Length: 355
Image (cartoon, rainbow, N blue to C red; front, side, top):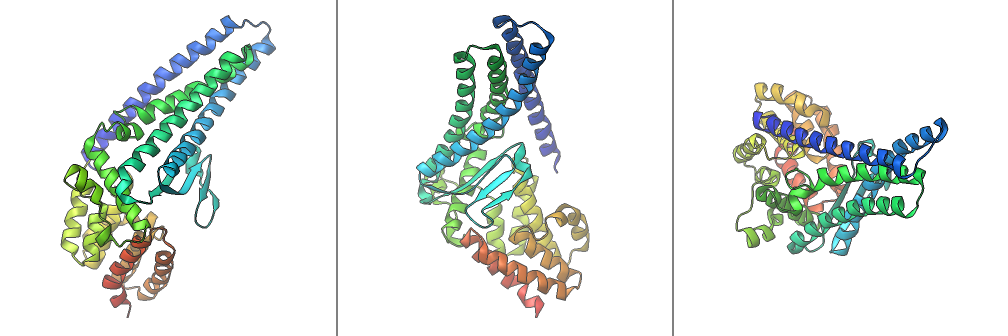
């Protein structure tokens, strides 16, 4: 990880902590005010109301996550997208098999995956989905406040007020423009990040529709902004053309860019590892192996990189086993165009070495 990226993460963490402190202080003050608005006496009732504060905080957090993701999906679907995956509360619901599965990482934060049916409307679809997430966040807070005010009872007041503040915290860290989350995109606080996100979204939507990478590069970006940003898909495109040198340059450039998202950095490191294996660069392979080994066989690119590594180690039979898994993954890839592009790369670089 570069120095610039580390500094950026530290700054982002500082903003998050500041927002958390503000929300906690406001939340505690409001909860305490409830004891004055609805006085109570006796240890039992007081302890019960304190317990309801913690119950409400947890419930509000999970309510927010559900509504936020559901409204992302709803608005995306309304504005012409196909929702393929939605995940929250530790459960993933997918359009593809398995339809329902456990995803523990979504216990603290969910996500929604969707692709626009008409890629030329990518900008509208992306903005609509972001607005949906904002609507879901606001709705979770509004519901809590309404119940706290309408049901004039000290117990329900503590329950619903304490539920509102985790939702308020999530709203702030998601939608304040200076954060790296939905807010920076919907308000376009960082134009470069927004344009790059839009480019990736349109590219993946075209791949989902079955276009190969050669045809899938975003046209919307060029029409609106005049210049298409360089992304991971440029590296993959160069690999599909057999141009290892240019693919390596693109990967190195993007990895060093502090604005490159972490998931894209991992994908780029996998490609650098793949290229190093093909070039038999022992030093580079040794450096990159710890970074990518844990991802082997998780997706098409990591499966391809694993096969290249086994060939690099002289383990041809193992590489043949991996190739079987690779072709099965490529056939079942939801992004049909990506599966076709990956097969081009595999057939160009790996398949000849297996014979």
